[in-house]
Image (cartoon, one colour):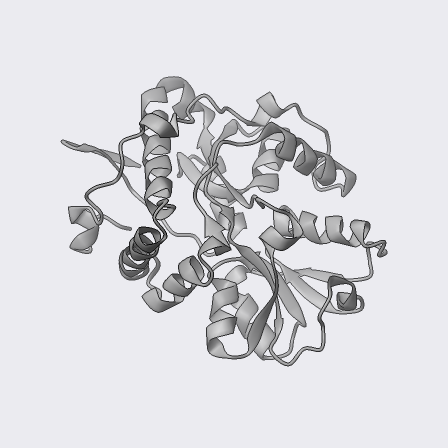
Length: 300
C-alpha cells in the first residue's frame, strides 16, 4: 500500500462506500491502515483481529439531521421516529443510545435502522426516514439540497465527539513502526494546518483542502466540502487527536452495555498511542497541495 519517494512515503489511498467492505479488506490485509469507526475497531480486536487504534481522524464532524419541515425541535421528540445510523458499531449509534438513557427514554423509543451513509440524504428526501445521524459530508448535502436541517451537531450532545480512529495492522506496527510514525506525523501536521490559530488562515486552508480533496480524492463538489469545513468553522476539528483513555473507556462501557462488544477490554488491548507526535515541535505544512495531488495523480 505504500510507495517510497525522495520526499518521504506516498500512502496510496483507497475509498470505500461502506464499513463492512472496509472491515473485510482490513481483515484480509488488503489494507494496512484505515480510518474506521471506533467501536468497530474495538469489535475487531475483541474478535481476535490483530489491529490497533493509533490516532484519531478528527473530532466532532458528525450531526443529527432531520427533514427541513420536521416539527422535531428536541431530542425527545424523536420518540416514535425512524432514524438511520451508519452501523450498530458506530459511535453515532452509541450516542443515540446514550442520549436516550440521559433523557430517560426507553431504548426502543426511537427506531434505529442501519443504512450506508451515502444513501441517507436520499432516504430523508424521500421521507423513508425522519432523520439520520452520520459523519460529514452527508448532513451538509441535505442542508445544501434544501430538504434537511441539522438538529444537533455532535459537539452539542457529546463535546469533542470521536467517530473515526486510524487503525493499523499489528504486523505493520511490529515490522515497520517508522512507517506508522510517518503516517501519524503527516496526519497530525495536516490537522494543525487545517486548525491554524489564525482564523482567516484556517478558513483559507480549509477552502484549499476542499478543492483538492473534492476533485482528486472524493469526486465530490468542493463547495459541499467547504460548507462542512467552514459552516461553522468548529463543525469539525483536527486537533487533539491522541486517543483519550477516559473517553475510550466510556465508549467501551457503552458498547458492552449495549451488547455491541461482547467483552470489556483494557485500553492497551486496542490502542497504541506511542506514535502520537509532540505538536509543539511538529514541522508545519508548507507545500499544500503536494505535486501529485495538484496534478490529479497519485490517488486511487
